[in-house]
Length: 243
Image (cartoon, rainbow, N blue to C red; front, side, top):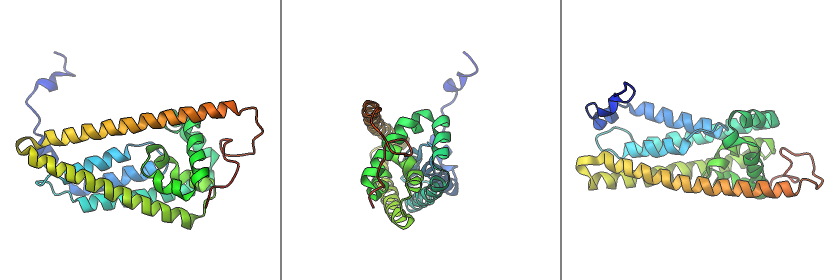
């Protein structure tokens, strides 16, 4: 048996003790930090962090508050998007080029072109609903700034979408986690694991659908390569975003 896998066969880890040892403040800070960085344009699992924190708050023996989880997520989303907006407004193409090189699968040219297409077509509604879609959640702030969307309009849609997303997700996961703990009193962590598994499955389905949409749009753009285009971020948006 190798040393790298011997831990699997050792005494079972006390999951309850491990969870109880987590400081609530650490949970709140981690939620705000990861969601904030994701909103600035860095591909991070913000939604996974929020779901995990909401599940922790469902454990009655822990001191993690669902209200503070939602508050931390809302603050991270609003502040991160605002910083991303300023970065996109000042650096635009250079920022997207760096992100594309560092994260080609999540923020490559095809993903950026599709996000720009959505923002150009729907304007502030893309900011609001973009909070619920992983790809748009990454590009919302930077694209809105690069496309010169008025900041007051952006902030209103961003704040409303961020609060609804954070509070709605936390409330739903907290309710599921609480019910799972009631059903599985002796093995509550199994209920949490099942809830996480369901969340990952749903997230995977939506991610694959989004990937197909990006691929379709990329194919459509390829067919229009010979058409004259105006100077744009990615060669897609010829008109300013709808206000």
